[in-house]
Structures are given as structure tokens and as C-alpha cells.
Amino acid sequence: MSGTIGIMQDIDILDTLRFIAKKNKRFQAGFLKDLEMILDSHSSEYKSIRKLYLDSQNTYTRSILREIFGDVEDLIN
Image 1 (tube, rainbow, N blue to C red):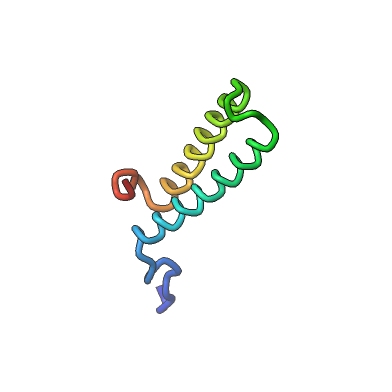
Image 2: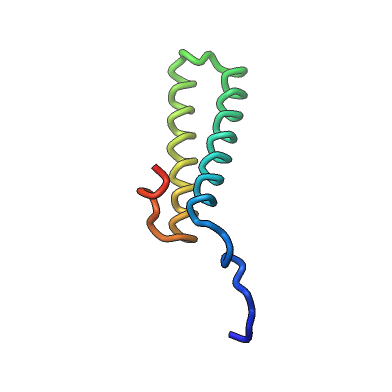
């Protein structure tokens, strides 16, 4: 390399993972709050959509983190 500084050089991986997890939870909470305005939170439709959404969102986030950082699941728990 010709003295180029990498973009990830001064980034703490654990801080980045925590930040992403926090943002993910905030977006999930917002979605579920909006969903509760449409559906009764005790209905089977709400429960099904909630589970589907949370599962897919968490899988999506994990896949992105795995591509960027490798398998770091145990580091953020």
C-alpha cells in the first residue's frame, strides 16, 4: 500500500457492534409501536408479524455483521 490509511483503522469493533445493536433495537421498537397502532397487540396476527419481523431483522443484521467482521456473535452478548 502507498501509505493509505484504512477506513477501519481507528474504529473499535466492539463499540461499533454495540452501536449497531442499539440502533437495530431502536428501529425494531419504532416498527412494533407503529404495528400496535394498526393491530391489537394480543391478536394472533400481531404476534405472527412481530415474530416474523424480529426474526428477519435480526438475521439481516447478523448477516451484515458477519460479512464485515466475521463471526462475532459471542462478543456482543
